[in-house]
Image (cartoon, rainbow, N blue to C red; front, side, top):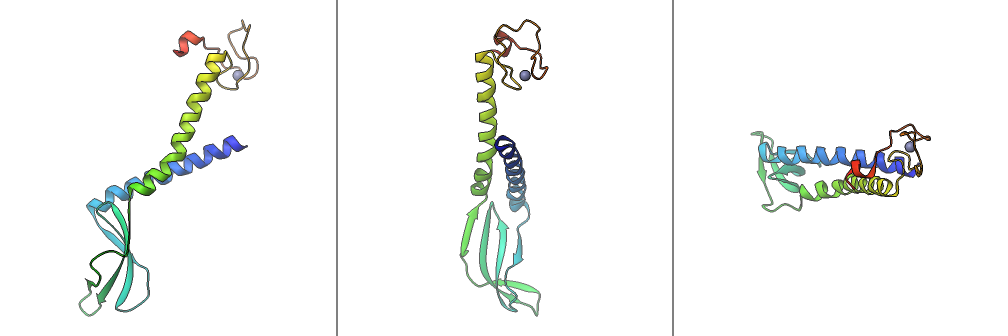
Length: 141
Ligand SMILES: [Zn+2]
């Protein structure tokens, strides 16, 4: 159950990571923003530009449908590589664990799929799950 939860969380984290990468690349091509306040002239915006997410206070001139920046520096800024790296940790951990478990099972002569001890097995298939038995020399270990 715990292993399955780890797999599901890793997959979701990888999806978030890829989504972040798409927004990261997109922030260089077309800057974008949304309004956070409902004010008429003085509002905060959440934007994405040049590889970062920012929150900035701006003044909107509704008469000319133009936006004038009130504060030059963003109030908060977060480069896209921060959420990208954070969401990449879980999938890398999952992959590293799988590789480690597989290598350990091959080295100990266990089934690579279910971990069943195949010592003395002559049938060539795992009696527990039916997976063909791989020799240690085949696995490159
Ligand atoms: Zn097996």
